[in-house]
Image 1 (cartoon, rainbow over the protein chains, first blue to last red):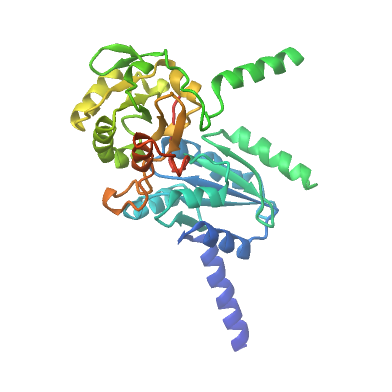
Image 2 (image 1 turned 30 degrees about the vertical axis):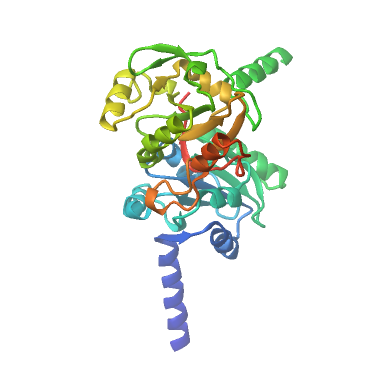
Length: 167
Length: 194
């Protein structure tokens, strides 16, 4: 009985945890390791943004809405903020206001170039940046700049179709 | 159908040109750009004996705001080394609002800009360079060939904590007749609003 109560309590904690927002400060290699360890989706969409980037803020709700189009087995969405340490609270408040939950990330302050190249060597550094990765976390598609919801859906649908997933 | 596709490719290629690579001759050198003092001049007129530095900038991008405390020292370094310096505002879609000519004049005054800050109407120059973001610098040598492209240095947040002065190193190299060691770099920045 005691074990059942502990198990129930652990499940409750885990459920609460996944419903809460957690922002981890990471380098690019730490980001990959962290996502890979916890990934169970066919595709992972990584959006790199900043509270000071207007196009990022404008496209943000489109990405959040993708949760209504795809179940978590098909698509996982991870946000990586590039806000500086002094703006970390603004970044977290923005995520909360957008009803973002679960594990997300903020870039550790430091070399931009290393970060950019480790995410995608063809990325110029323009924000927002969106990359779509497969289960092994290989980058299979990416783009720079703001896009609309239709673009995101069409891109994800086509990538899922290539993987033979039912839409 | 083929006509529509051709048209789409044409429109896309007109809007988005590929970024110029190292060694490329300065594009748009005859483009006439209006400076904040009201004078209109060709881009080439800013070139000096040892070259020209073109920096795509704007009034509001947070990365520009962080880096712009280095603009005056760089313009001074350029001046001391007979290299021209011009900051270009290519945010055409914001030229009626936050990046208007009047706002540029005000911004330059507030930040004590000691160099030309010109309007790139219709983002023509940015498109010819294939420039995508602000701030982004392009350094040309005395033959008008691109010798360095990318970031000013490796720390937008704090000039005192800079470890690698990419641009200053490139300026010093071409002024002394040496080869630029690091020719391209990357940094996070704001997209140019075409």
